[in-house]
Image (cartoon, rainbow, N blue to C red; front, top):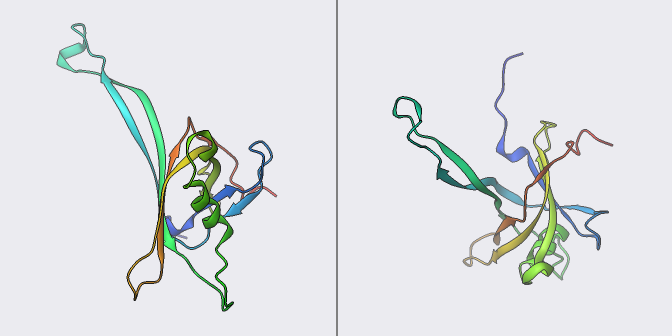
Length: 158
């Protein structure tokens, strides 16, 4: 069996929809079509006159994480639109400010790869709408509050 590439679509995002950060009720965010976790690193030059052969040195003095995601809002055949519970929890959090806007999320690969994290973040936006021929898109940005924690991949744990 040869090597195969990991697929971007294997990322999964869950949000805590329970009232307690320490005892989460994990709800998947469905309808995602794009997912990207990045860090924004602040670096400072820590070189000095004693550096060897003219080589400088940098050090990371602060690191922030964020998740940018987008997807499609979908509906059933019901007359009244019922939003996806994960999407709706993020949309509602995007309408709050301060510490009440903080939510707990976890993101991991559904293929069982060891990449799995959990963290507290705030939603900086939740955009929806589109033109009259669009499937209604949404997108949001989650801004990390402190360091994300590596966790056991939930796909592998009962």
